[in-house]
Amino acid sequence: MTDIHPGQRVAMLVDAQNLYHTAQSLHSRNIDYSSLLEKGVQDRQLTRAIAYVIRADSPEEESFFEALTDIGFETKIKDIRRFADGTKKADWDVGMSLDAVTLANHVDTIVLCTGDGDFSRLCSHLRHEGVRVEVMAFESSTADDLIAEADTFIDLEDRTETFLL
Image (cartoon, rainbow, N blue to C red):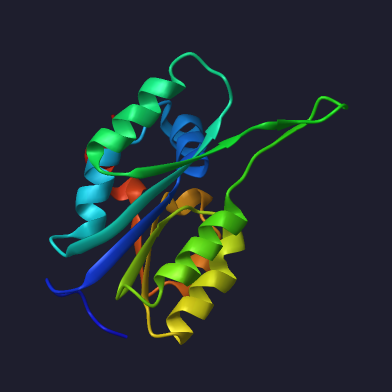
């Protein structure tokens, strides 16, 4: 695997729901997406930054989506699905995985911002394809197998003053 160097092409894929809920449950604070992007790219060449978000019809979400765009993220928005029994479902696991596999031929590094262990197999696949995989998340709520499969793990917990608002 390659180390970090200025010429690397980087894509950052952010599971906004996962980070939001973890930041809220651990710290009752929000993610600083501008710092997340800056530290994830680390002076390398940003190819794509995609934030995967869920529309749940809350009043402040449209301004949040706009703020992500202003920071430099492309937002992919999925409406929350409500079922007859009252349960709700919304996740981007398949969409993020497909985008990562598609981007793999166009980048040197993919930064996954999620603690979801469902992405462990994706990391393994990307590394097999020669792509460096970096994961940024809160270690206390990140699956051990996801950390193990990544080339690098950045614990957002270590620098809450940087990554939280």
